Image (cartoon, rainbow, N blue to C red; front, top):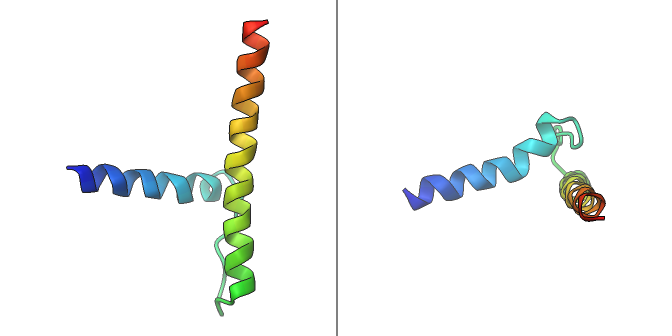
Length: 62
């Protein structure tokens, strides 16, 4: 059961940025530069997501 939950979390971590169009899946041939760009887009998505959540919470508290 735990492995299914972990798998679902990993899939959400990588697929949400792809499904929202924020990150593009690298095409062939897979190079380190393309892989790094993909990981950077995913991290940028999550940073923007958490920044937006914090700003929303701050506005709600004021």
